[in-house]
Length: 308
Length: 190
Image (cartoon, rainbow over all chains, first blue to last red; front, side, top):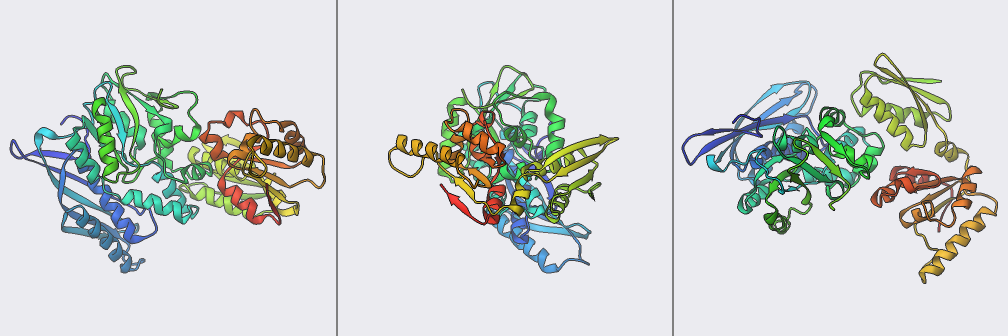
């Protein structure tokens, strides 16, 4: 594959390819068990985004053995294993190193049909864009570090991050998506940009349809903005056009770096409603149609206040 | 004058340093040093959300932020005057037009009566009174001139995209609102 995709795909036969990805990071929540769950959901996400089925995983651990209680690590791994079970992924081993800063994640191997790989590219003008999880985890994680997120806000964000993209992935394959990526560190705008970069198509996003975690706006107004949001914005500003009527908050949130964010799915217009309905039925509650692919403004993202 | 050095600190630490300094001071100006544009913006956002005024000086990649506690916090300390919490555009329940008329009369009467409240918090449909089309704007502007803080719920304004229709007072958030109510000696819910 010529472009950078969410995961690496290696064709074994005409029918079978392996798909591999690795991701690990520092804690985004205070509770170790929950952090373990989130790290696993996040690591598996790249496989789901491409339409693959993860099978095995290897733990990657960096742990400050001198300064932190080993019980903490045990809880993280317990959370991780629980999430792997939920995903029907087998833990095949792992490796740990002594490090001043705690980090946890996985190297994941899965399978995929080489002819049915969902890439980032491939959207057609008129395609609808569907996002399966609300935004705001970057801002809320920043506030958690500062001790300014309320327990309810932190808890809801943690549950969102710990949710597997598995169901969303399976359903989009059944309904027939055109292309897909998952929303992580570059934020919605950054990952959306990757879908259309260098193509003849553009993207329109409806600001009022973008799902957002409760509490995010208040925390953003209090300056709980992660450095990554500013970097994402500076990097993508040249290709992102914010139309009048879009609030400052909404023009910021599209750059919020996400941990274990949702899938951004591009799908033919006639299938969009079916996909939304199926996702709702399967319990993907906060899924939303947030925009569409256009034949105009090639390679650019235009954010409008709402769908007209 | 208090100087806080928050240079070379990752977000959100500069904001926390600012918060601690604001909580520890009674009214003086705080000077915060930061050396990234992100930290500068975040500290500024936080200070504004707390009702402070902020002046920024940039010099060779370093930012000096002068933060003055005005408004809200001064009022917290000196005020035994009540806080009015207004969560609707009507007074009482019943006929809508009558309820609206009653609230209009209430606010206008408030404008002619002493003592003044310390603060008036407009939440949910209460925001109808501080935005374009309100029938009590003159009274509220007069009250504000006399030092009564008029604060409108930012969430409501954003939700109905009314931010540029706000005609009197400042925008507030839930953090400030909760803080205002908890630190007030008396809250009157209208």
